[in-house]
Image (cartoon, rainbow, N blue to C red):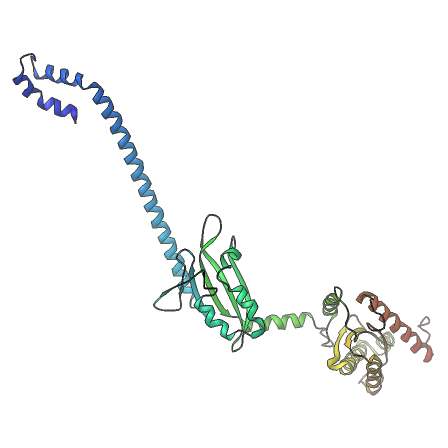
Length: 367
């Protein structure tokens, strides 16, 4: 601009002064006097242009990033809107703006969250009124809004199941929608969905996995699981472990067939289940082997009940049923582990079996 201005004004200066022979001579003379100014202005202009270009480049990059974030957020919100039809309750929690918004609400109205004074969102304040009393502490701990970000850090979701006094089991979930580079959630979706039917199916599968198919008693797996609970603590004073075995099952299988043998096992299961009743649990732990965990101060009464029931029993293929029963009590052997108690009950059962064969004149070795 300075060179153009000097060139344009050169003819004017030629008219005013006599020492310039031509406009061109005037132009070069005047420009030679502006050497320092030209260098400084050129350098300054280059720097200004460079800074301006960098600024606008960053500005456009930020604008592009913001547009991409807005598009991504809109896509996520659209997905959450579609999710709202699946869940009973859907709440969008923004930890940056400290707001909550129900996506089931057509107005999508935001409500402020006071992180200093408030421990639960408005949605959970309503839901807690229907939570089973014995689960209230666990529900309040899981839904505490002050600890959600820390518990959800570097995680996609956290969930827990609770019981609604009206509609049964429900599942509460916190799902990360947006987070910082450090993995701390900025925006979270909170959902509540009824899972009562799912829980019932789950309980049914557990029941099936813990039940013996033939006798409908508890199976070996269930027995091992129950014993595990007693290994780390003291046995109750009225704890009694029974070991029971069917007498003569092999003879029945060999002479009358496996249908008769199955009938004998089912008969033994029925007699044991009725004799123990609601005082404990009976397990089929092997082919003709049974265990029972019973809570009673009179184990001999249980033995008598089992004997009476087996004496009354008659089957289609087999006329009579005999069981060998042994037991061990926690009261008589304080400090003994559950595994040692099991060995004692087994030893007592085998002793009873030997007596049965001896009293009935049966040579087990010959057999």
